[in-house]
Image (cartoon, rainbow, N blue to C red; front, side, top):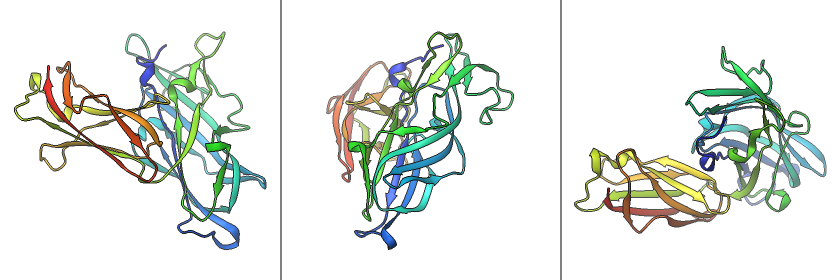
Length: 303
């Protein structure tokens, strides 16, 4: 079993922690807490997990933010979010850990012949599709007991009345691999990191054809995708180009990006082997918390 393109098999798990709505703490030193879940697509066909609990760990012990199990395919949450925790009141203060207790999971991977195989934490895992044939086991060491620890910025999260947002990247290419010494087994060692952002941390990309430029083989800009690659983590997010206003300028909106440096490129459709652009690509794009980025490309030639 293999990933067709391991370098692009990157998913991101975005945890949006909306804390309070003003500059002061809530009543009795408490803070309102909301959590949204987001993902970016990768080359794994399916990455289904059941999150049994979401926990916040501080000096006062464990605060359970959610204990209603949620089963979700991470790869269906591309550039959008799903509500995980809404308006939970927690004591204000500093927390050392955010943890997910994961009770079950399965992944579906593509084989060399184009078929797919399923690896599950249990052949009776409730998240499996009806009639699924499980090819092997997916081990999840301690994830159902001690939980999955999210690496926080500076190893701590301070909650006050100010709004805070934590974006958590889940790297699929590093989080799943063959189990050592076992045939037909996989193991889940999630690699996820968190960074504080604001809701406006994103990028809007505009792409248009230069005067007189004709794409080969009757291709259209609506068949292209915009791709942002995080230069520090190599995490990749792609968004199709669309032209909702039918004005000839196509756009892609990237939401909930981790602050940092990115490279913008275009993913070409079948029938187009290369393009030239102004400015040239890859184009450097810097994402700053609270400052939405924008970039424009003009396609000046194509083969």
